[in-house]
Length: 311
Ligand code: AMP
Ligand code: ZN
Image 1 (cartoon, rainbow, N blue to C red):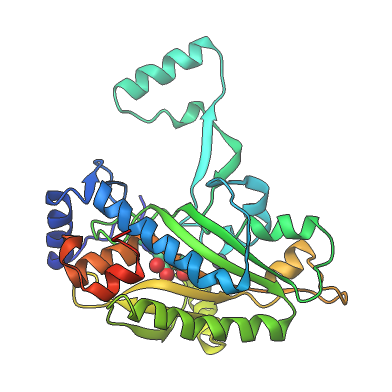
Image 2: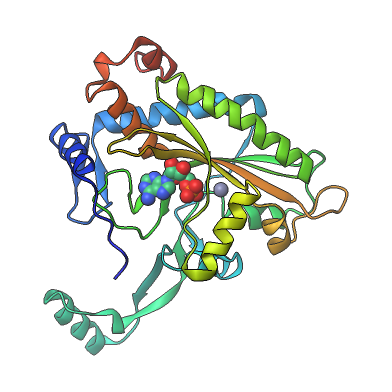
């Protein structure tokens, strides 16, 4: 079983309130919710604000479905670093008798996985992953590299929890830069202040922190330490519920990992570097409802205006 993380008392209370207000509806599975109209309105309003903020760079939209070719997960290192978070798609393969057995077992809620085979697709764990092989396919980058926009992509991570801000499936919006090293580093630092300003303008109480990913196992600890040391990841945290603030946006610098994996080259033939700016849309929405209350009509004017909630 994956590690189940029980939410704190404050997190459970917040979830109760969200459900009572019709913002989220439970499905019976931890971390999988339906979104009510007011929640979705705010999430999409925030998504629109990201679009307006990124506009000056004219990122190229490249919207993928929430599935990745399995081959990509086998190539990009994810299964080495995060085997515990990956979700794969299996499907039935068998004859009529096998189908009948599967149905029997399933009806009794017993284990029917023996009748399931791995398919050629897996769940996408991050919005930017499918972009890199797609860019590599085009040949060398244009001069100055590329800036891409994933749109509000559904991603899956197997981390069941009763903390409403830790979902198994949620929307990640990413702006992604693929270019030479210096360009990517400079681009990331530009987004650092831009994102800070953007989220503060919504009335969120923010903290910035150098961060690391939840790498698996003992060797993972070393990877996490290296990631911190080199400041490859930073996060913006805001209060959602509970004592500690929650990461609502993060930026990753992959150095030439994807450039190397997919042989992405700059116009001068060097391995490309990549970086991304990721917004966790449900988390931003949860932070906004937590900061300003569950009724958007009583939110501060500046936040409503920024989000264009009155249009
Ligand atoms: P990461 O790739 O882990 O940095 O994730 C990018 C963003 O997605 C984070 O900054 C969070 O806002 C959001 N996020 C990550 N994990 C979850 C989760 N389990 N539930 C909801 N949002 C998440
Ligand atoms: Zn990314």
